[in-house]
Length: 300
Image (cartoon, rainbow, N blue to C red):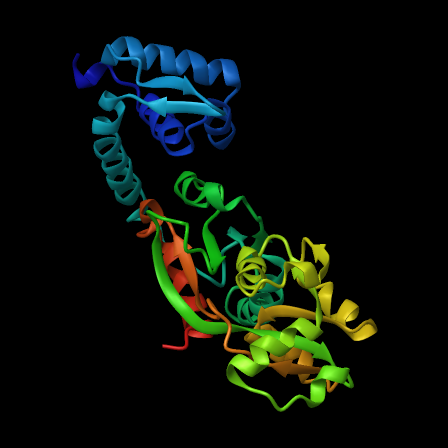
């Protein structure tokens, strides 16, 4: 086989399938139909003389040949992407670029207000679209360009470029006047006393549920929701308590309607980072937005 026989789009398809382990998902990322993606894989298999991917539960698994090709293909595509983008300038005041960002609802509340104020001043034509994706798809979505950045505590997301923005920890938020509010206990005594409380938790923020499980407080869980931002109104109207990040809890507690308790939880400390793809690291717009975000939010 000679390099002249290879269509660049076939390499892009190979890379997308390798990353997602799913032909349908790869086709969606590349704006292809399922039949077109399947036909492209067939062409590549004939050229490479290897199956490349075999069916597996819920998708496909790469062959040893595909594993050996993956890094070289990824590197070649990244090099070409950078070369094509090097001459492109990004002018914030004139740009109409759309940046798509993965973040949770609590991340939107924490980061978007300050970010939008900065963009209004520095890049008034730039648009932001939040686009949450499943954690298992974040790295592939960054590499495909489906999203430009991902904010959050994302320890399971690998193979991305990242920078730490801030450190945070999990605390308990209660309504002001809650019977537990006058507790002066600390340390293990405070952890033991949490059995007096009933909790509301967020399904998508799994570490809050893990903390309750590790403390054997699952039987004290009365409500599980999908989103954080509904919790303050629930906490204020009830005696339910919520385990949540301190940076967000402090915003609510500033209204005098809530109080914060800081038990010595297991897993209580975590970091929030900004993630992006190495493929787009040299893109001027991506670089400008990274610098803007780090300037606004980095504690370091």
